[in-house]
Length: 418
Image (cartoon, rainbow, N blue to C red; front, top):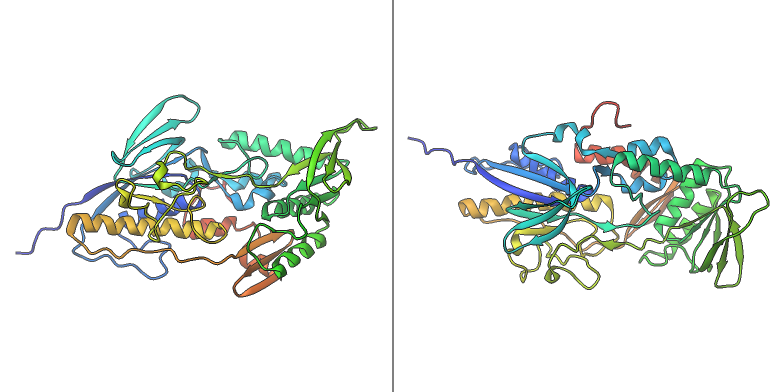
């Protein structure tokens, strides 16, 4: 007689963070749960007929009530129509409303790796809830300050926050000054000028070249400067901001006087500090898992260092990892996919003695794709390219918003998305 099929196995996976990496974990586990090839696999994945059915119960915890397209944040802070679509509430992701998929609006405050328990503080309350899990993945990324990204934690508050900002910069009779010539500042200045061509937009950077903190080629930095100027932004290099003080204006409109350490001054209605003073949102992990900056130390298979209790059951994916390369949304989604695959391998190892074959990250050289108004620049080991064709290739018509949904394979409620 044929042998009986293995009994189904239930595995609890807790994911902290519902952005690119966190959703990457969730959707690929959902496919493995359904016995189909994970949607982000480059090659078709076929399950062995002798493998047991694994029922993944996935819980995603996020401080926001939805997914915010961080890549599009500069445009969301310049165009109200776009801002409405850059945030999608988890409840509106129709194909993720399943019995084995739960979204929790809150923040993880502590992870007990030895006990496999996490403490979650629910949004808007002091209530702490304990979640037990079999596997945990930190995908919380960085805690980014205003105005690098909106700070609201609900869609309703986010719409009000972005609308107020857009109204303020749209009425900037004395112009807008963006401080910081990294990717964030460049994109913010360019999107403002694109959406509000009647407003004078200036960008001040402390160094002699843009993108000075990134390990990119001088060609990339020079091309970025040219694109920014072509977009109509006034660029002030070697201008380190010393102070910004509100002053009286003859017309009664808001006005600030910015002073730079080189002795020069300028006036603007709005001063936006686009310097990303971001820190990893990883305080819940034990000290043994973190470096001095709070980044999570991982092995190439995205598991925590072996000195952490139950290290093989704990992962990190996305911006919060201590790994090479400039952080990008595509890399975060890819890392989430690898975590899902490796959790699946670990379950098979535990349940049937399967020899696991783990997916691993590779070292990533400095590379970037950055939208600058109507054009974009890309740069990496293959060289630097720019133009409208680069924009089409990397960002499409909506700063890769629809590309993210397509790659993650998530369906949203009708009338919500572009």
